[in-house]
Image (tube, rainbow, N blue to C red; front, side, top):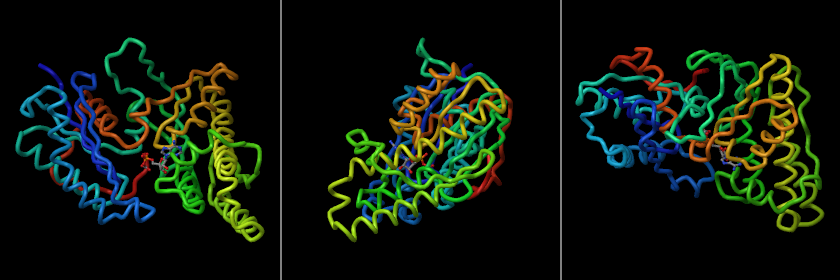
Length: 339
Ligand code: KG4
């Protein structure tokens, strides 16, 4: 008898479904929403409508690619929150309908925990490495920047977090000021590869402990551009690559400083990276370098598991399934929640 879990993710602007059987990922299908590009950010009402259109084809495709029949599913795991309420509602309602129709169990998943547990997704390959408990995880996305102490699959504590903007938000807002499309993070990453990261310097916060702040950097970047454009209207166009490289370096320096300090203070040997911003090539390199310099074991997620995806939701659901943790049909999504 197999344990076969369908995972559903719909917390923001990606509709995703994945199937995990006996701990091995069989499929992971994601439909992204291009409708938001024209607005420079995710429009919640459009996101929930697009989820409604995408969810049936995405789930059907995930089941088809897994090579199973839906009647073989043991449980459906879904993101309950945090996220956009309208978007979450689509995934939660669909999961309820499917669970009722197939008479199977439902498992609610915390989106932030799922990002961390993406490190345990197994595709059955020989060279896979998974973090050992306890480990630290830097979780950086469009909505979160946190350092987590992960003691077990379901036992995570936030030891530091942003007091204002998230790292991804800083990337996206600064990109917007430079006229780059949404989401700006990947564009900054690409341009930064041709730029001089030491050309410009921007404000770095001086916060005690392990907390982050990115609103000062955003403002410093904005004012710097305003002053330079007053002198040369083509300043951004002429210096885009250097601006991106210098901005990216500043964000990475801010993130890494606290990760290093936390790993030393907590005497942790295993350090992982997670969330959408973990796709950033500079941050991935900084983590690799940190591992080489410090001797710590570093875990960087595969690109396909960095941004929102259902494989991580199915994985989190699989662990709960093994522990017999299910929810009932009264479950409602929540927009805000901690790990
Ligand atoms: O985790 P995610 O897909 O969504 C949530 O926020 O939950 O993260 C999206 C964020 C966006 O801010 C996007 O700009 C950023 O991740 N991002 C990147 C890169 N790829 C995605 N930021 C910097 N460099 C990248 N390569």
